[in-house]
Length: 504
Image (cartoon, rainbow, N blue to C red; front, side, top):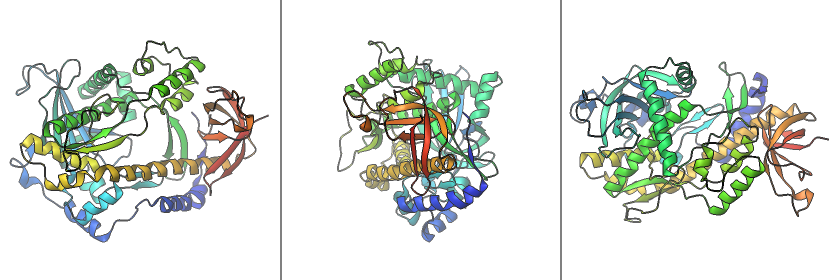
């Protein structure tokens, strides 16, 4: 989809101060307290070489790689995959693949109860915006000493997992502190191009094979993956302009995500065995919401047979149809309200029996992004303790009850900031187009039968620029999924608001 861009003058004169104000309104932490910053700088100089062979296994001979968006510096994960054969020792019966997933060893840089630990609990998450990232940890760690950057030795927590020929996770999961060395920093677009052209090496071919097996297994469990185009802000290489665009997820992203999901499922399995943990949870979609989505699919002309589940249907949907944007918008309503549940604590001593993640259709714990997400550091330490046959550290146990609330607060702040930055850029992009008519598609529409026309509401996704905005006035004739021509009546960057009306 083509885009219009905000040029350099608008970036300096409009976006920068408004983004500053948005961060102030939402209380997005920007600067670090002096004590936290000093601790991070001191920790960055720690020498982990003395731990090799005793506290830390040496896996620098494995050809780990990272796979992230272009330009990423906070690299949490690196992977190495191999197909199991008779020549590999210590691999259990029935295994077909061996997955090594290295996670940044953040806990080795953060002193429990120290000023940096306190600051990470205040932040909970890294917040991303068009003009930069506001990290959970200072950049000296998150983009430096703790990041799994290429061609340097790094401390990591390595998950060793075995899969059978169908991609199912076997029971012999091992988690240890290690030293690794990433061989390359890969990006999604270049990996996808290699896969498409047939020039990918063995590691990337294995990523695609294992990734697809895990996708198939997720659908078989009753989980679902829907490719929803993301409304994203992209900064030019020279930093002089921003673009707002709709981006279709690449298959390489989903394959990589499946390694993270696999590790999260393995983590939940270990936490169940340990009797203590914190899971990411999501209640199943309500029957009435699924029925509503069936009606939407029928209205849009998609063939969703009565005997097909949602998971089965989304595997067959034609994502190239223009009506797909409307369906995807409606489908996101099915899975809302994700949270965290801690157990094995004084408040919740029992292991839960019904706390799975319905979109994944499995018990699941966050452990793969500790540079960017607070809770992952704690889940990782539980896995390490269980695999070592040791008690879970007291600083982990003591923090579990408060973590769900801390993560919820951080998520609300990060989501509000992300939405606010998109709203702001939408207004800036359309400010010079007030009075013009643009083409779009109706992606949300209230029922029109039996209500006044003035109360009918609709949301339109414009084709150029990629703006999503409400239509004011009479929207009663706008049917979901239909093409529409709208007029830009107002665009106010100060209020981060856009007003559209039906043209003609």
